[in-house]
Structures are given as structure tokens and as C-alpha cells.
Length: 235
Image (tube, rainbow, N blue to C red; front, top):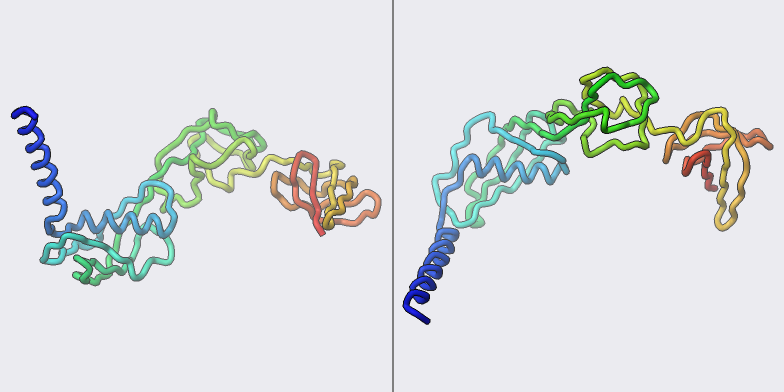
């Protein structure tokens, strides 16, 4: 090994050792680190989709000590994710409880939601080309339809104005079964399958349970919509 390569090698090893030493060195804990740890924990606990942002309502005085390893352990969660969260937790330094406190946090959950570009008539199909996305706080606009949801199996249940943040109430499943039409009904009882004709007594989309009337017995039965003009009944 040349002197130049030996010097470079020693410098690299020295830098790596310094990094390891810095990573293991005791350090204090900050409010920003506390809030970040709580954000990760609460997002996982409530299975939140989006960017959860938290802010302490009252300042917190960190423990007057240093530690190699810090952890935040939540001992009492809020009942639901809301714009104001009350969380009780312990701040643990190298396995020792350094603080046990209740924190009040302002919370926002930012994610994209669907917004109508133009007025949309009732009964029209869900078409992303007629929509745009907007960043909203899902903790305050809880009914907003996430941009990750909605597809062409939906129609608009009511007329939607322009610049409207869509909600699930605005949508309905596209009917696969139409009221008053004759459809196929497959009745299953174990390995026995019977196919018959029936009249749909209500509209129904994929996965809906609808009432149909047997054309021969005139008996009303309920079944699951499984395809276009097809309902399945299980006994």
C-alpha cells in the first residue's frame, strides 16, 4: 500500500470511528424530538393516512440530563384522533423514566382529497378527469373523500357543485341491478345450486344486499349483488 492510500485509509477509518463515537455519545432530548416521536406513535396507533403534524399547546421543559438512548412510551391514548389530543406518556432515558407527563397537542392530518372542477349531475359516473386534488386537514374535514379512494364503480348520488370537496355521501355504487328489471338469482345450499328468475325490488351496486321477488312463488328474498343483473342467495 502506498503512503497516499494508507493516509486515505486512516482518514476514512478515523471519520467512521468519529461518527460512531458521536452516535453513541450522550445527548439531551428536545421538544422537537418529543413531538416527532409522538407523531410516529399516534399515526401508527390510529392507522392514519397522511402527514400528521403536531404542536405542543404548552411549552415542555426537557429533562436536565443526557442519555445515549431516548424513548417515548405512551401510557394513555386519546379515544380518537381529533384536532386537539391529550396524551399521557413517559420519557425514558437509557431505560430510566426521566419524565412522566400529560401533553396537550394541536393536530392536523394533511392529505389530498378530491374536489370537483365543474358542476356534476346526479347519476354521472365518477371520472377523475372532472376532478382535481386539494390538500386538506382530514381531522377537520373528516368526511372528505381521500384522493386514494373512488373509482369508476361509483356514480354521483346527488348533484355536486363546482369547487366542492367530495365526501362519501356524494357517491353511490353504480347499479348492477335495477329496480323493476328481471335478473338471475343463484341460490346455493351446500353443493346444490339453483338458478331462477326474479324481479329486483330495488337498485343495488356491487356487494350490496337487495330484495328480489321470485317470479314463480312471488316470495321476496334478499341476496348479494355479485355481477351485472345477478344476485346470489345462500341458505
